[in-house]
Length: 159
Image (cartoon, rainbow, N blue to C red):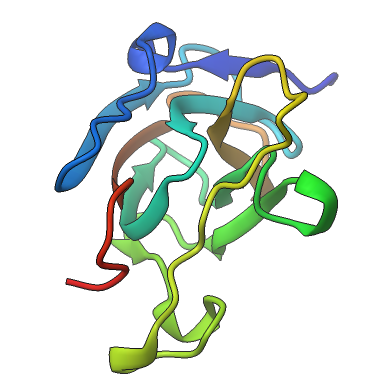
């Protein structure tokens, strides 16, 4: 079966780039069709300059377990590239999977430096896309994802 791309209903909203305080974006995506390894879900837009404070997700299917990775399509790797598993790599089903601060640049604890979305001035859209990718598991129906992403545009880097 060919892989497919699915879009969350809030994906078409403009990225929130308010310059004060923590911004939160949350939503759900019901795949609505058969999900298979390699499928991608576009969850929301994250503006250039956003410093990721927290991310968590929970996903389930009605039958077969599937592992999902969560990350950004651009703006977090060298040269502005993407990393589709920079927040959660192969997260387990029916479990609350969270951003690992220990794996983020700068280490963990009080000295944590958040992942920051950094795009080229030539990038025509000036936002990254939060993605969910089916990494493993048997093709099934009724994949459902719930997520919450928090970020800051202003300082300080930590709360």
